[in-house]
Image 1: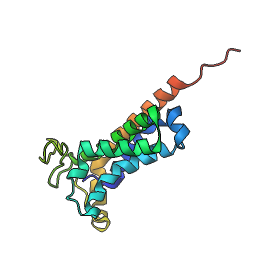
Image 2: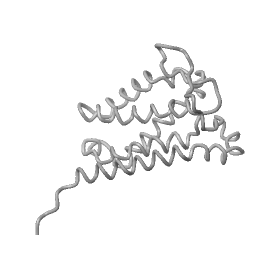
Image 3: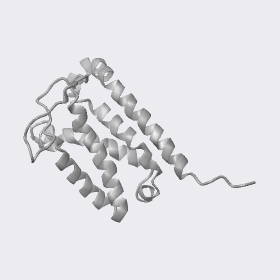
Image 4: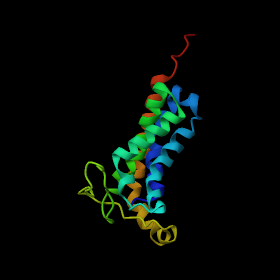
Length: 176
């Protein structure tokens, strides 16, 4: 798996443009939008603590989309819930996609329940991160270095799209 740090950073960064949504800001503070996105991206790794095979059912696109959509409709209604579901589902889906870029493990059941095949991308540049915090620290530098390009790309994309969104929704200047 990619580290929880990278799962959080990538999803929170990609959710930055959603902070400009007036509809979302009516139901939660601006800062909560990327934070909740980051938490939804980390959540699939709870499978190991629940006794569910790792990178299995809880890493499937179908389950992640259903769970985040249900959570969004609990938190909001109407179009706001649909927007929130899109943000949270997009965040959660980054998790299995990052895991498919790792150099270890058994692969990800991305298309469960339609297929129980475990998949990896052909290119696997991310060093697999152990689930145990105590086993993570001795390898932290190597793991985080392999994840850094993905963190940086997500952060640059998130900031860029956030600024574009902000400039497109800014009120026009008042004439003097």
